[in-house]
Image (cartoon, rainbow, N blue to C red; front, side, top):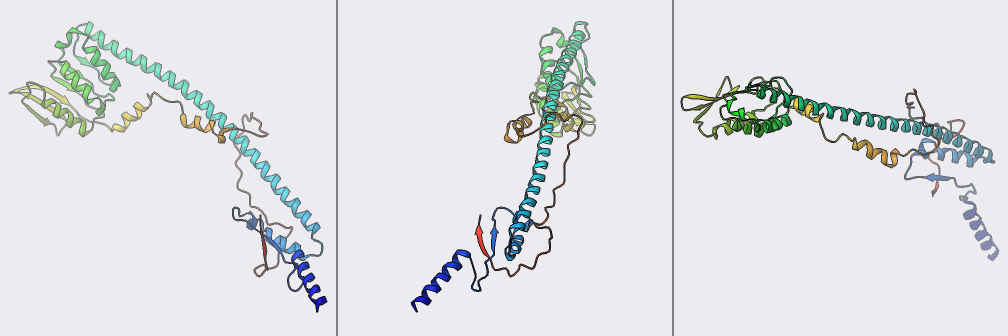
Length: 322
């Protein structure tokens, strides 16, 4: 009995060491991964099971390792191509940024010249004794109104102005306060034409409420289906403000956005300074004239020369974690 117990213990030890089942067959060792689906996509476990059933699995293992290395080489080639494309894209972003900054500087020079030309036109009108302002269609903006107000206060002929025409410009609700200051700076103004600008109903209502507060104004009414404000002083028509054919305020906002103070493309700079924008590895920085090559996601073939394996639904498993 002692000999039989010793032999049984030795057989149990051999089974544990060689991973044998009760019939003496080797238990298949399968791989389980919780972070990747490559085991399923490459059918690794099916191949391992088939290899372990053979008497000499070494040739199969060598063949499959060679197959895996081929897949890795293909993936590395594609990764290098993508890295080259990324390097070229980063170069294009930097070139576009420089071009954008150059255009911005030129636009600022143009805006400065335009502002000086407009103010010079107004000052020349005053110097020539023609005090009524006809500034239709000159693309005056909210900033231009601030400069116009400053210019008006520096000329003595402001008391002779009775008409200010600013139709067809790019004025919005943001300049309502400035326009009201211009009205207060011109004591004898009778007509203010703000047609074909970008005022909203709220801005027009603000005009009406402010005009009611002007000293000497006794009655304010809307005329022309709300397209003009008529301010009366007693029985006399004191001031008329025209608001015909107002356009979409978004058009003026888009135009004002062109004059933004910051066109540094910060989002692109952040990307270029991040790890995603750092180019490393065997990259040829010069890819002139080549369009980026985007390859479709490769369909990984199953491991093994043949995809035909016996059904493994009832495979006894002894899983090891990797």
